[in-house]
Amino acid sequence: MRERIKIMLALLLACLCAVNSGLAAEQNSLFAKVFSLDADSEISFAVSADLRKLYPYTDEQTAIYGRALSHVLLRYLASDREGKTFSSIDVSYAEEPLFSQVEFQAQGEYYSLNSLLDKRLVKADRSNALYDVSENPFDMELIFDSDKAREELRTQLESMPELAERKKGSVSVKGFPKASYAATSKLNKDTIAEHAESISSILLAGFAKEYQQELYPELFGAWEIKQFYDSQETLVGLRFSGDAMIQEAKHSVTYSFHRTADFSVYEIQLLCKQNRNNYVSLTLRYDKEGTKYRSEYIAAVKGELTRQTVESDLRLQEGEGNNSLEGSFLCSEDKGEEQPGKSIELKPQLSIVKNGSRRSLTGDLGLKISKNNATIIEADIHFQDNSNTEKLEKFAHAMDVANQHGGIDKNVNYIQSVVKNYYDEVKQDYKLLDMNQYSDLLLEGLRTEVIENFSARLLKAMLKQEDNSAYILSYGMQQSDWEAFLNYYNSNKEE
Image (cartoon, rainbow, N blue to C red):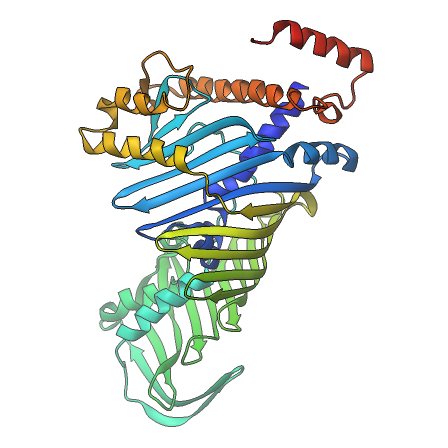
């Protein structure tokens, strides 16, 4: 039974990771418009889930966990307004409270007020420190983001000078209107330095920051630059070729970029090659008003390949008071024999209602996570309006007031006075635990306490149901063992 409760916690934390760590915001900027926070805005929703598959459990076992998970409701509120940033959750099982948490960010530190840790306010240098997400199933960084690339390229193209005299002609590029003008530049070792920063920024547009640092090219020698313009003299294409030092090794670099004038369609081909066993390549095709694309990134190191592909068919409709997002998004990654291949598939049917600075989210999100072609988790996540945010807002407001009047560290008792209005059992003074001053052993102890307290509250909530959630808790037990457990629980439970 304890293992069953731990699995329930893992499923709940999986939902929390998807929401609170911004799964989609990290993986696709279209999803960021749904999940992430713009400056001076708030987002709220309540989320539940239906479980379809859970590895390595049978369909019958998965159905048991699914029935339990269907009783769980997670309410979410996040805000980045007036200089204060916080995220908060409130979790219940069949309307029985399990726990609540507010995480407030101030001066680069994260303060967590969690009802599972009585009388302690935790300070850490990272978000969600109380949860061990080292095996987060959503932990899959998007190497190349097409929407980010489009915005960065748009900025670079606007400031890029004409490097050579344009010549009128007709240049055909498959899938694009013919270019009306072309300019070809031959940059030598002396003149390449003047344009190296601009060229490097174009080559790296769309890559995650970590990969921009790994791939940063130090250009040298002779380079050929071709620029293509349409009949309105808009820069619609580029081709580069030359040599560069990447991580202290000489690479030949070739790059081509083409787009329509309105940027609704564009494509990129990039190859940085040291030799046939060491290279990086990227191909991207982006079309249909910026909502459908396919990209493939390949990195070869001594012949070992890392490959990440993205296939997106998302349709974002933006209105004055309502946005909608529908379609599909699939990200697959393969790092060779040493690490299992994995993929994340998302199928949203979401509506985002904007009311002033507050956004609310409703609809469904299909989720499927696979490793080595085996389904690890498959679920339907449901979003609904979350109007009951008073408690979470009061907690966040208390930390904001404390922060503005000398700092949270010095006003823990004030925060406690607000918390007491919601939890009658709070009698002792709060203590601030600064994780930066303790070893990881204390943090592990706190995480263990969170799990144990959650398990106790979940068990209590499940046994409060008219059927004692017997179909969940007693699965696989003999009737006599189940009855013995109930007798033991009833004789030892708190009054």
